[in-house]
Image 1: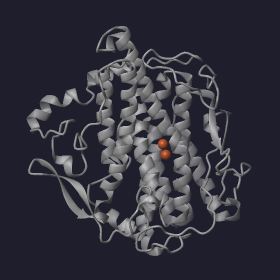
Image 2: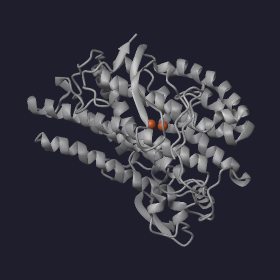
Image 3: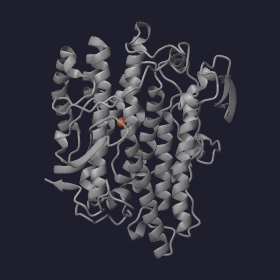
Image 4: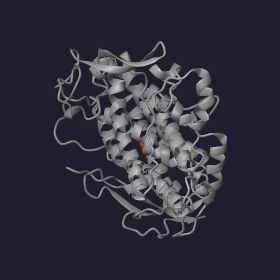
Length: 472
Ligand SMILES: [Fe+2]
Ligand SMILES: [Fe+2]
């Protein structure tokens, strides 16, 4: 059964908001605060309208419609995936029991915490990306930026709905706090490190949507397994929107590499820099940076909190139901990374406390598919150079490697050696300034900046030269 979304409501939704006046009123009083936040912290480039998709149905077919809309009149709403029949808990101590439609008192604070942490990342990325419109390399890319931004705004709505509907006064307070913290703020920063980094240029944006939105995919994947059914259904629908964000990242980096390779071949040089492209070395440094800060988002190698979340049924594993084990894990063990006395190793630990590393492992495997794509582009251009993911211990601030100095190749370095070399592995001010100097806006239909190849296809069957955005 598929239930359409009611767009006659002030807040479009498929959760029967009109049937719960108190909740409806609470969310309607949060709505203007959200809109104030959007106008103060959202995209800075003024537009008349943008060709955006809006969710209209949560079903498999035709879930979205496309059209030119005013960005600040986007219909942010509350959409949960539908379930057929009763869902049962797939893992942990409550395995086999019916999924929860309410929050059990004993898990209330943990669930609220998980929702707040997820919710905090969504508006953070809008804040990080707010100035990118001014330097968009094409109208197609500008449109994609706004699409990502409005959907991250909607993901905030998704988490705020849960906080309002299931966590009472505390939940309402947390929903307000989600609008008060700001990315990079000294006084009230966003909760997680990567979401306080700046996204000052489009190479960073493509890397962010490739590496950091992909972290989001894996976090949402674990929450989709949750025994708390409304959280599970919310995350399932968010994942659907999220896949476009990763498409923007994957194909964005594809197009940077493609253009760089073209310039290298045309000019018979290793360095595309003097020819208006982004040097391959700089692309590699951006990969190193965004990959390593995203790895930190998975937390320490071992965690008793996460073990407890799993056992309680709050948060599962990636593809929980496809795993071939007992889904309880009390008798299983796994290996996690260690860094002791200056050497990299592994240690066997109970599987439950190694779950962060389990998720990170899935993520790393996924990330390496992107690098393989980008290397195919180099190969097809006839170039011998290759890109690579750095060693997982490289540039880490969280977990076993946080105190070490490890090169991209996995070599353990002294502090002095690190000091002498890190500039050749991570973007320097000079690199960033050069990348920024290339970011001249191209706001004309069908045109594209010199450092980027055009996309293979447009959006929703439209050509590349379509007027995706009308500027104000
Ligand atoms: Fe999101
Ligand atoms: Fe996203």
